[in-house]
View 1 (tube, rainbow, N blue to C red):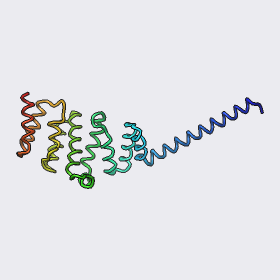
View 2 (view 1 turned 90 degrees about the vertical axis):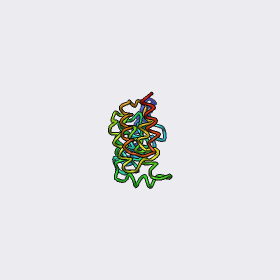
View 3 (view 1 turned 30 degrees about the vertical axis):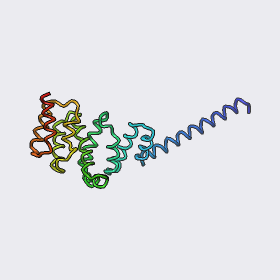
Length: 197
């Protein structure tokens, strides 16, 4: 056997070995991605790959339907740049049957701070997605279910939105005035300033 034939044999063997290794890695990664998407998401998350990590966190939640996996997904979603996905999963979060229990178990400073966080983000996303009346409904339901708290979703609508119209401000003011609570005075005064300004 000549040197050329030997070189060809070595190259061919190396390429076959390399192709086998790559094939094995692809199969192994695919298996992990299918059977442990949360683990895969963590890998992508650790290297800063937003889209891949959120994709696999979403797969993990869809596989388990567990509120803990949903909270991880919701906390990873960028609510401004990924607003459609944020609306979907924040909606699922606040409507989840285990939402109150989850917030009770996770919150260090009381359940309402987490409830305010998720409901406030949901209201923000709805309003930014052009669903202002839905955002008002969520804010109203929050107050009916949990009472008027310091950082309730109405506060997000009053202070957190950038392009709020006078009609929207008036709608928020009308809802706040129906609450008939002294705590809403600051927000109503702020709205009145915005409407006059």
